[in-house]
Image (spheres, rainbow, N blue to C red):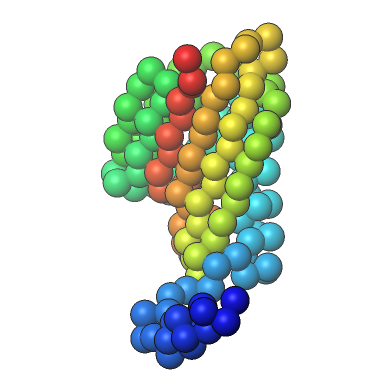
Length: 143
């Protein structure tokens, strides 16, 4: 609308807007989406080695699960190695968003086959010299 034109012009001139990274650059988005899908395949097939490769190997990496809080890559790796396979799940909704060329978030709603509970998964990804890595993850179930 014509009432928003002055605001839009101001935002285009704004130093804040000029320094804000591009959101969802097609090439960057495609790369993160590919890794998000790779993670989902590894999770459903319980490919622990692949899952370990997708998490950033750092003590700052965090994963909050349905019944556990894991701090650091080593704790996450130990958890993955000792847990039962979670099995397949149906993705109800997902969103992948990138900010600039090296940062993104993925979110999904899912439902495990045989369950009526809705699960939620959020991940923060960082592109490192070794590729996209999860630096923070959160999984929860709605009651």
